[in-house]
Length: 208
Image 1 (tube, rainbow, N blue to C red):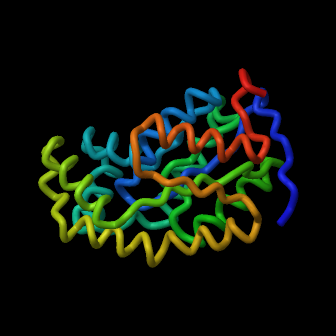
Image 2: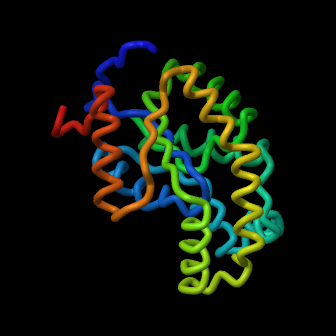
């Protein structure tokens, strides 16, 4: 295992957060974004905004996601590259929901290389499947997401295991993964994330 290198977070940090649907990525992404003063780039938020506004992209994405599928790599890659090229992401970012596949990992590697930078860490949230299903069903009821049935949710989890979980192997080989228990209160999980990153020398500017 390679020795952790202290990251100058005053210049930003380039992070990924991964985990199954319902593991709390969005909530923790907002916390990390604020703590490190970097934008949280969520493909899910971008897609949902387009769906809400019924854009051509939104209509296409809605058709795919309503059946429990994922948006094709080519379309997702284009959207992410455009977002990372914006000024607020120049000194750092947190990716939430991307990459999901090894193909997207390759695309991100190429993009980072072409911009003379690299990832600092990959935060992996882990959570019990049944607990995640229960959490998502509750959220679906609260937010009126009629399409989020237990069958669709379990299908999304199955797709995650098939396509996305192998990414952890890729990033583990690069010694980038920080594994965090995603169960508990928001503050408990947030503190676990900070502790895991700090152990690698990655700290918010105020704590650097």
